Length: 441
Image 1: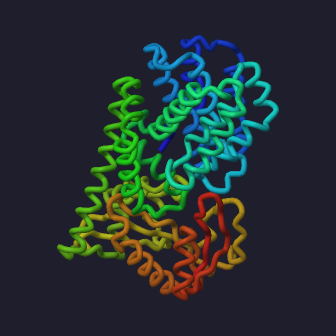
Image 2 (image 1 turned 120 degrees about the vertical axis):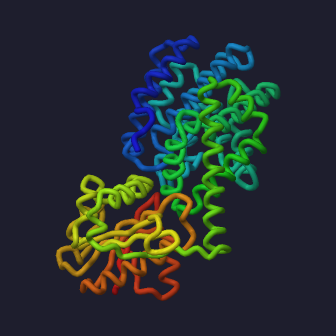
């Protein structure tokens, strides 16, 4: 799925709001462009398939400024507040180290406090980096327990360093509320800008980059929104009330979309567990694989995979109809039931794997590559994936392959190693921890 907005779109929207708010100085566009360049230099541009890329950063900045502009017009926040929200939203997720996708706020703060170019731009815009640092730290999530306690100590220290807030209790309290404003705007972010397809793609990015199993997407998304709407209700309602109706509607429609998806998962689980409806792995004959409706059914499921896992996208139909490709489907009810998932793969030599993989078996024609399995949303976690994988192993053995290679979550591979399966890591990748492995057949 393509991004809803590109970098240039969001840049123009942000600058448009700043100009309307009276921030028409060249220094603000310099800060914005410097941010965009930094994210691209660190590989966190639009090609980075993670939730916390440049698009997320700009979406949060845009939504924050839209809400802040309305509140400024109602005299609820000051023009100075808008300036600080702009600067802190832009850098709240900038993590130069990027050990994992989830940002490490102290790293972002360290950059804000030490980068000479940014320091010069902040000075030109009359922005105090201590306040920016404190606002960024307030975006720590979850805001509870030890994380909250550590962040609060750092926040108090930065307010004591700032000439704006030092020994000024009312000013400190004001900026702490502004930090809360930013943290909730961060969590609303892109979910207020698109339909459920876009929201689900965002959730998949988050799951992929944080190495969550797909069956956790709906569960954790529902918990995320319930926490936001219930435990952050005061600020959440304040920000939503400051956004245009179309944004409010998009956000609430997306919340309901995740809740409906979770309801579907529970219904499917009940069907399998209580009604004993089976999920049946099936090897379909070539006369079935050649039909357009069969290819279309598989492609619809294929499109639900995260983009980095969509192998052979450009010639998907050709690969399904290719008799050298090993393929099996997962059917609901019996072997003639509706297709709810599939796996496929072929000789390793037919694939161009990601950079960094040097597989010593490439060229030996003894290894089958298993593409990431595809299941409809709502059917993960019901055991069907394991059944398809086992059937694929049997298919590969029958064709004389000696090894199987593929990608899987690091924790999943470790669990299979603990079960004494003949599996080994070939190459590990961070931050997503989606690793390349080999199995001896």
